Length: 151
Image 1 (cartoon, rainbow, N blue to C red):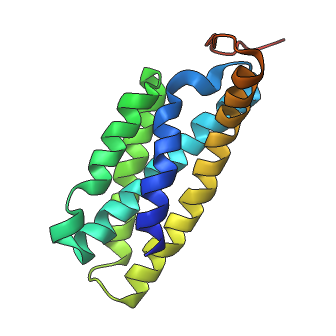
Image 2 (image 1 turned 120 degrees about the vertical axis):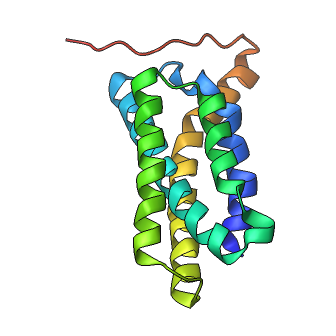
């Protein structure tokens, strides 16, 4: 199943990211990252409902646990954290309203949302890849900063 394989590998990149992506990024890039994290939380909520319904023995709380880990590792500011939790819960409710049982439509939706999440994870990982390349070239330490608004 594409969502299992993708999420196992791709989330490691996001989880490893933590605040590292904030290095050398503009305020616009930072906002995009926060938006992507919130959207990823929404997808996690949808997957939590559907996968819990379809595979309760194997995926009962997997997606909620991944959401918790994402928040723990990302350490977003309070408002961003609250928005991520809100969107996770909204994604869960939305999936519950549309998918009352595990059928092909629900499984197809989960697979499609996992593919969408894969794109989000790739975009979230791009700055980290650049940082890793830069560090490998210079051998210098990473300095993490939160971008400031420019006037």
